[in-house]
Each structure stands twice: as C-alpha cells, then as structure tokens.
Length: 322
Image (tube, rainbow, N blue to C red; front, top):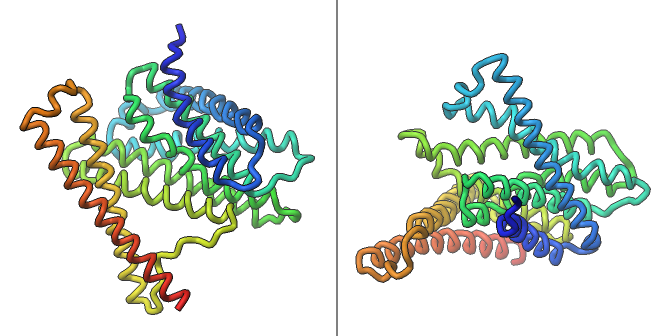
C-alpha cells in the first residue's frame, strides 16, 4: 500500500526548490515541461537503482563485493565505479534523450540548466521515497539533503547547455561535457565517502568533518554557475595582486568553508540529538543549557565564517572599483 504522506514528504521539498530556481532563471521553460523533466528524473532514479542492483549481483558473482564494500576504501571504490557513474549517467540520459527527441527546438543555456536541475530534483524525490519506505533516513535528514543531486549535476548541466544552445557544435563542447560529467562523478563519490566516514573509528572519523564544508563549496559552485546562466558577473573572493596575497585569501576561503560547514554540521547533529525528546523536556535546566550552548557555539563559528566571506567580498570590490 502506497503511503501518500511519504510520497508528499519525498516530493514537496524538491518541488519547492525547483520553484525557487524557476523564479530565479530568466527565460525559463514552461512549468509543464519542468514537471515532465522532474518525472523523468524520478524515472531515472528507478533505472539507476535497477542498474546498481544488477551491478552488485554481477560483481558479487565475480568477487566478494559485499565484503569489499564494508571498508572505507571499498566504499570509495564502489562510489567511483558504481554509484557515481550509474546515477550521474542516468540523470544525464534523462536530460539528453527528451531534448534529442525534440531537437527541432534550440534551447537556451538557461533552459537546459534548469531542466538539468529539474531532473536532479526528480531523482532526489525518488531517492527520498526509497529512504522513507525502508526507514533508513529521517524526513529532516532528507530535507537537508534536497539540493545535493542538483549540486552534483550542475557542472555537466551547464556544459550541456552551452553545447546545445550554441549554433556551431564543436568537438571541444563534447569534451567539456565529458570532463564536467567526470567531475560530477568524482564529487558524488567524495560526498558519499565523507558521509560514510562517521561510522568508522578514529582517525577515519575525522574525514566526516570535511562533509559539510565540501557540500558548502559545491553549493557555492552551483550559485556561481547560476550567476553565469543569469548573465551576472561572478562573485570574486580571490582578488590579490601578488601570489602571497592570493595564497592568503585562498587560505581564508578554506578556513571559512571549514568553519561554516562544520557550524551547519554541528546544528545538524544538535537537531538529531534533541528531535527524539519530548518538547516538554526542552526546558529542563540541563537539556536547555546543552541546547543553548551548542546553538550559540555553532552560531559563533557560522558568523565568523560569514564575516570572512564579507571581508573577502569587500576587499575584491575595493580593488576592482577603486
């Protein structure tokens, strides 16, 4: 029996995010077309799940694949040869095939980019439902992860948009698509490996502290690509004239990502810890003090990261406009 509430929780957050990007992108495709590509993305998720099951079956008949993927190195191998290529490949096919069938229309870069996001969010909705159905993730966890597949696919969606929207199809365009697709596969694998590191003992567990900073960087990359699609100038953070200045500013960017990402990580862990509690217990002195101190600590680190970001932006503006 299909649980309608699970379907709604799986689909509504991706649809809301799709609506947000629809409002931001100029000359966007029609809502009906976006919804069609959203459905194509969900279908590609089902196809990816089937292909992964086939891969697992074949691989386990050749080697002890289930034993290999229990270690962190095995997880990394699985992500780079199975999960990343299959999932990014299915999403790419879900964008390319419908566009190819309607090739008499030359789409704009912004349209192709938004259709890619629609497919990625449809894939997310299907994945959400699988997690909810099997009870392996909470609604909060999956809602937080709503933009992740869009962040994975944004580079090749941008490259595909440039290729499709251009009047002259050059070989360099295909190489650009392949290169960005490989980049997406690698980023996909890195994110899944970092998220899995939390279940291992030290020192491997320290890798999990790179999870949210890496997601924050991918979100930044998505926003930069979106600005290109909107024909806006990129946000410049590295503006130094000398190698020493640029090295210092890159270090500040990395520090801000570490601070900001782990501030989000800390708040995420705080919600996971307190969510099973009865709300009436939140005001018990010990629990209230725990929540307040953890919240203020992560807020401080997040504010510090934001301050570094604003400092870099103001420095860049002064050097470019004065």
